[in-house]
Length: 347
Length: 79
Image (cartoon, rainbow over all chains, first blue to last red; front, side):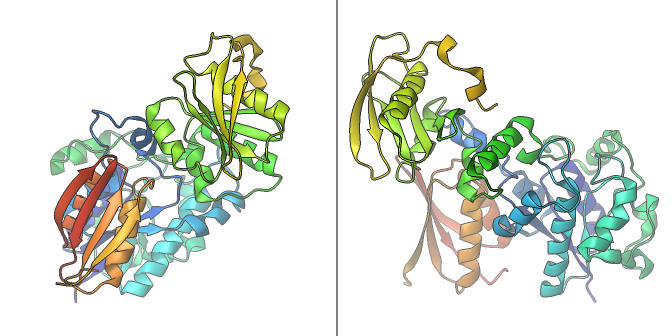
C-alpha cells in the first residue's frame, strides 16, 4: 500500500524541507497551497515593475518543482473572510489572525485528504519559530481545532512533540525526523545545504500582507469608513496599490505612484470615479465613495495634481469620469505639500 | 481538431491566473486545448511551471501588447 501525504506548501524553506524529509522516506507527497488574497508575494512587483525587470516567480510552484511534486493551488478567498473578520483567537501585532489562519488551513487540508484518499498532512512548522501560531503550547490546539488531530505531522520539530499516527503506525520513521525549535534558521539552512537546495525564498516564508502594519491600517480604515467589517477581493488588492488619501469621510483617493500602477488601476475605471491629469503628465486616481459634489471634486483634483508634473502650475486640467462614466473637464491649481493634511494620508 | 477553450485572466495577478487555468483544465477531457490570456508577467514563469508539474503542455506563448497568451494542451488526466 502506498502511503500518501499532502504538504502545505507556502513557498518558504520550511515547507520545502518538511516535504523533502517525508518524501525521502518513500511517502508519496502532493502539495497544496491556499490563496487567501493576502498571500500576495509578487503582486506589488507585478504591478509596479513591468518594463525590463525579471518577472517574479511564484515560490510555491518553485518549491513543488524542486521536489518534483504536483501542486494544487486552492482559492479560499471567500471562506477566508471569516478568519480575517472574526478571528476566534484574535489578532497578532496587526490584523494578522495567525492562529485562526493556521487552524483554518490545516482544517482545509484535513478536508482535502478525506476527499482525495490521502493518509496524513505535513506542515513546515517549527515550534517557537513564530509568536503565537507556532508556539509549542498552541500546536496541540491547532491540531485539535483543525480536526486534523494525530494526522498532522510536523517533520521539522516532530521529535519535540508527541508521536503522531504516521509515526505510531510505522508509516514514517520518527528517528529520521527533526527536533528544530526556536527562531534560529541555522538548522534549516544546514539541512537545505545538505539537500543541495539554494535560491530558496526568504527564510521563514511570510508572505501575508496582514502582518504588515501599513496594510493593516488601510484595511482598518476601509472597515471604519464603510461602517462594517467586510471586503471583496478587489478591495484587498487595491490596498496594495498607490497612495491612499482620505480628505473626508465621504471619499478616498487611490493615486498611482508610477506607470505600472496607473496601468493596473486603469483596469478599475468602470467601477470607480476617476481623475486623469490631461494638461500635464500625471497619475490616474480612483475615487472610492459616493458621487463627488463640485467642492469635493475640486479638492480631489487639487490633491491629484500635487502628484502630477503640473504640481507647480497655476492651473492643471483634469478629466473626471463620474459613476456613469460621463466625462467632465476640471481646471484646478494643485495643492502645495503644506496644504495636504498629514491626517488625510492613510499610511 | 477540437475547439479551443478560452480564458480571460487579464488584470488578475498570480496565482489567480494559474488557479483559473487549473480549475478549467480539471473540467476538461484529455486532449483539450485551453488558451489563457494574462497580463501579469509572472505568468511567464508560473503557467509553464504549473503545466510541467501537472503533466500538461504549453504549446505556444505569444505576447501581444500588454497581453501574454498561452495555449495549453491537457494531457492525460493528471488531477
